[in-house]
Length: 191
Image (cartoon, rainbow, N blue to C red; front, side, top):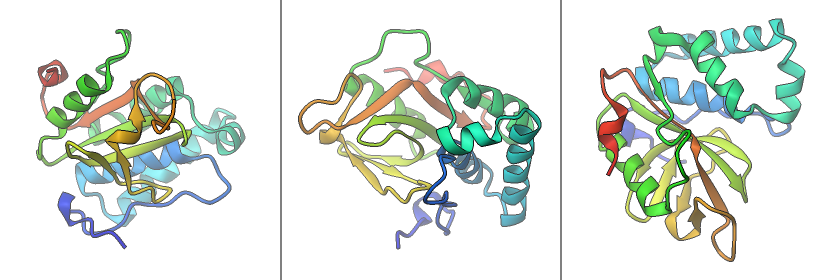
């Protein structure tokens, strides 16, 4: 079992079920837990709020089976999680040309930079069609706090373009959320 003391959390991420497609919800729950060091009870309440929200809108079955798309992640972060739990949810690469891997990697490293109370929810395609939470980034790997217990993505296997050869993990910059409770300008983390 991985030791989660790098973030000061001390406990593993909440895990999604083996047959559901709720990695998006779990990425939100796990990111919120990193940011706020939420108790089990507070995390359960957030999960309950997320499920009630989807159920009231008739979306629970759809997302349970098919997963959550990017536009719904935005709505959920705003309407359910809200400013009281996560005050800043920025999508740095939305609406701009897809950056190369080095530029994107450095922007994530600069944002996380060891400052507590920050998390990145990352959209993936390719080998995994998945939402996950970045725990830490080194020059060689992304270390994850993940609902499917994926531990790391080696940089040598990542791309921001399309899967080819050994680069099987497509990182989706336009579907990556820089989350914190800081009063910050996310643009300051550009390289």
